[in-house]
Length: 266
Image (tube, helix red, strand yellow):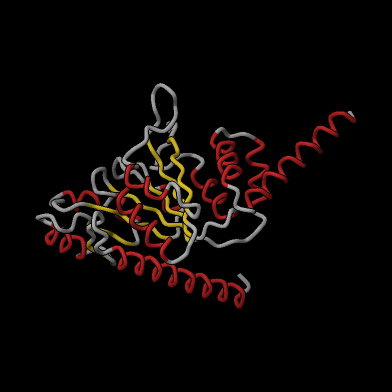
């Protein structure tokens, strides 16, 4: 019995040590904890409890949209924009699982390579492993780990397979849907899908034919619609500003709701 007690204490000490390494921003510790969470290890859950006891506030931004719209390029440009502001950025890129290994079949991450040597940027590909909704099962927990590690902006790129990618709205504070020109009648179909969860809609590849028509169609019913050409960075500063404004309004509304609850006792 005493041996079991000593083992339990040792495991608790190891969990606390790993949690403290995460809080210190140690990349290897961050990766280790996310791996534990992906494998649904009880150790990962125990460490997560230690991490979430601290209150840090990262901006969690979801990037969703259809394949080929340029989500990865938009994410890469956002990373560069936030780094230029001196902010630490974490990226969780969700990919389809390999039918052989169960790991992530990496999508277009070539444009991310410019950031891989930047110590202020953490990039992690996560496999869906059969989980539906556009995210991996551990994505939400991984975002909490990055927040605990001191990353000020967390970008979550969804898998990009269609209209059912709605899980991101439960994780991200701001959801950005990236579409490409030439949607036509597809806009009507998307109203019932992923665009309904978006706070901001981006028409990427905005220098192509059909961009103006797509912008007009979307502005009929979307509150914020922006044009970008992510390959050149055009429109990215406006997107960063729109995200900041949405998060500011969200914080104001949250503060007002808390004040109302306090005064009404609800």
